Image (cartoon, rainbow, N blue to C red; front, top):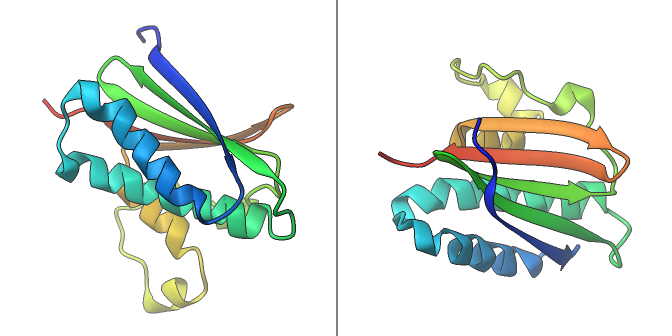
Length: 144
């Protein structure tokens, strides 16, 4: 694995208005890489869904809280890691890494659609907890 290049870190308030700022920051980070909107959009969708989960579920009653987004490139892939100190993702809500099978209607209706969407939009999803909080890393391989 190559050394992580061009890391950028931003801190955002835990409000839905932060989603616009997050999308703009993602595009600013990716501009020098020359990737098109059709490549950016799935990562942006997954990122905004993950941030929405932090805001609505992780920080449900903490409007004063904030979360971090760390943008990085490692060789042929771009990652965005969201770090928060909210309620962790329940283990039963984390989909298995192999999502080749379509969800049944019952599975879609019982929640978890956002996490399923996140997994479908990026190449790799990692979730862990540390002393700094909850970490959700979304990785997408660069085209070419």
